[in-house]
Image 1 (spheres, rainbow, N blue to C red):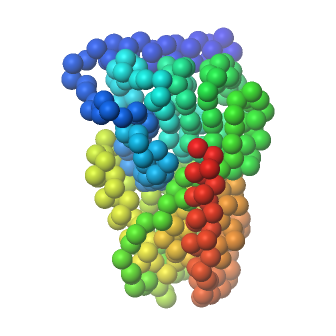
Image 2: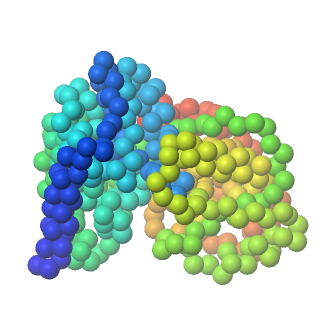
Length: 347
């Protein structure tokens, strides 16, 4: 236990020292509009997980709408440490610190959680908002030590709001941080509606994980063969495997995957943002549960839309029966507006 505690503490203070030293780099500059207050978006996804990229994108769209008088400043996660104390020197009392949402408030993504803690700790006098997250913690000693650190830093901040995107995380977060303002809201991407040209839907898109969160199911391996007899099958994962994407590259990649979904008769996915991308592009989808509560919990927000089907157990007959059905997408706009209104009202 003592060794684990030392690892967490040393890692955290290494981040602090590194960021402090990097803040004196003459190569790092951010263009600030001196006439406007700033709203910072920390941990902006500049890596190839398009679910996280979409979270950053939708978050910034929402913030621009909510705070039109503010300059929205995108801080890529790869620049967190070198930017932190540079920004600290210029931040004003009106400036807002936001941190991107996602599913990385977890010991599974230990380094990202330490970065989030460092941001909250650094801007102790500013309003800080953590956009909708899922809390996923293992039942081991490393996780307990990390939770102790989280409790200490988050509880100490007097103007902190943490949004969570499903009920399991909400209950766990309220237990972990009883004095912190915790609010249940949808994943921010659910509030966005991309403007796409009309497409002829002609294929089935498989959007399936290949990482540590993937669903272990024999039928998912057989899907391409089952479907290829009757349908054109396209594989398109939400993870494109690259890093340090520019803002323009991020936007381009989002448009590509949303276009692919919009030309699909069906999407079959075990990815949370595979489900959400299907929702915002009005694409019928069959969603298979993965190895945690993220998908099932977030599905509750959109379960009544009529064209997203969440199933825990899939078989060949059920799959073919669903794909040959014709779900309605008529409820999309009302539900999308409702989720958007809820998120804006809580900010």
